[in-house]
Length: 490
Ligand SMILES: C[S@@+](CC[C@H](N)C(=O)[O-])C[C@H]1O[C@@H](n2cnc3c(N)ncnc32)[C@H](O)[C@@H]1O
Image (tube, rainbow, N blue to C red; front, top):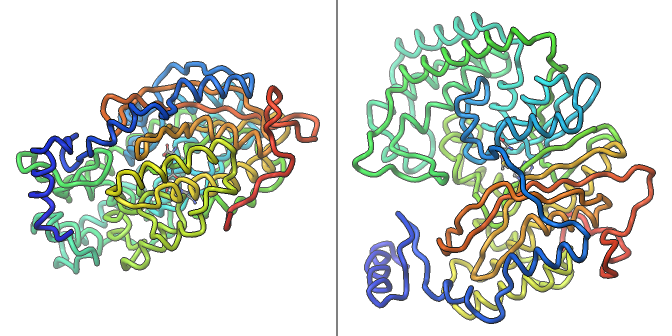
């Protein structure tokens, strides 16, 4: 629809009572509300009950902070506020429960900003992560480089600022909206700072790049809440870049100094690979504990949300490169149709529950005829197909008795409930892991229907001791004999 028709159309839909405004920029067709009330709607309680019956595991409760918010005041974790991250306290609890210390190895296949890796190293373990989003990789690497002398960071940052002050403004990055995203004054300071950064490679150079990356959104007209969007006209238009850069570096140097007090406990330097977790490849039986939070079903488009950081840090240089990165990330709602085309068939999904859920999504989208895309079920299908090889590979990498702990949410899509947490637990069982527990950690609201309560859960899977695979679901006969299909055309 041409842009100029969008607002009048939304207004007309709202006047007729066919659409409800949920918040700024978010509208929901009223029929999706009604879909949830349909007689054939299968909700959380039905799935919970079936899950307990089939696996023998009843849902429990995890208490304690789970979101990244609690990290915002914590030394080191606060260096790169990652809305999609989880709490350091949660990770520390898991490390404790699995007795991580010297000589143990902790893996995070979707390492994000490195919350797991920082805590694992602090606890004395060997920390290992894979992550695709370059700014997150940078954050994880810098945050786990505890050895960087604070004075060296201060000197490097001082030289950057001196060079930046002496230079003329440079060219903006390739993003079309840059001039709208920043005031001319902020743009001038940011391009001068960027062009004054030292070449990548040394720990101090990486740390000042992170400090620069961190100030991009605060000094723009944008915010992440959690998606990237413009601030309201009334909100302040951002902090001054030179001052913000200086403040970021001062905080980092102070945290590095504090960290030194515990240096005798640190594990060996962490490894953070910029790599597709779906490819696995971690050595067999080398990992004692894996803790992670994968993207959520049909959730965040990380590439769109971090395009400003990716472009300014020089990690991507064109829209084609942004698109290529999106194709490598676990499936989200913005994948091009060519990527979801092999997943249009609902047969061959990696779990029988998906055999019920995918056709329901397809039917509801068809019934409405106006959903954002008509292949949502294929996005969901591809999402789970993307995670299967990670489950299989982490199982191979774990030592017998080792745990794989995942924080993941459920979803409501096109009026269809998708129990992402229970599905991942089931897929883990099919991959040869045992379901130890599923604990609900937090309630959250559905974007499609505010009154519908979604959740975020901690799923704990264990690699059985004593080799051989067990039947995935001891209490029901529904388990297939063959192992799972790995990533690729289903
Ligand atoms: C929920 S976030 C993890 C946040 C992390 N727990 C933290 O505290 O910072 C999920 C991460 O998975 C990454 N990701 C998505 N697809 C990936 C893939 N195929 N390989 C590696 N990482 C991927 C995203 O870039 C994102 O950073």
